[in-house]
Amino acid sequence: MLGVWDVDQLADEMPASTFYEWMAYYAVEPWGEVRGDISNAKGFATLCSITATAASAHKRITYKASDFMPKFGQPTKRPDTAAEGQARWLRNKEALMMHGRIGVAAAGGPC
Image (cartoon, rainbow, N blue to C red; front, side):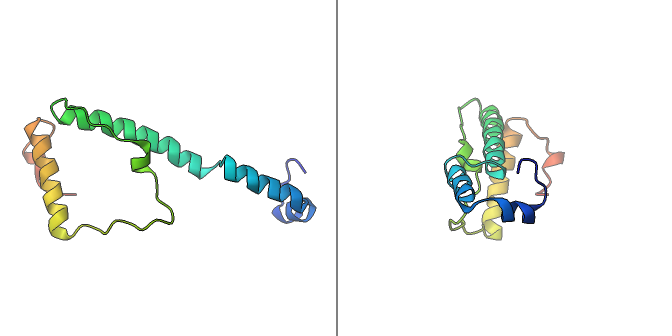
């Protein structure tokens, strides 16, 4: 059964007990994209923590990997209204300009 590429053949030949064992193993130790999400989330958390700390006059700002993980099956936060999004963008722009991270010419507006 090792190296079988035909999914139908694999389904025909694999005993149900083996399939259920693999399902139980995955429940305990998932693999695939879930693991990729965690790896990416750790990298994003590190990068954002470094960037936010540097942009905030060295006040330590930290992010957790869970801040960047998808939340499957959970209700999503309501989207910003246009006014809220613009206000958030302006706060970020002002903070970056104050710390010399972007120039006035580059601060024209959101992409």
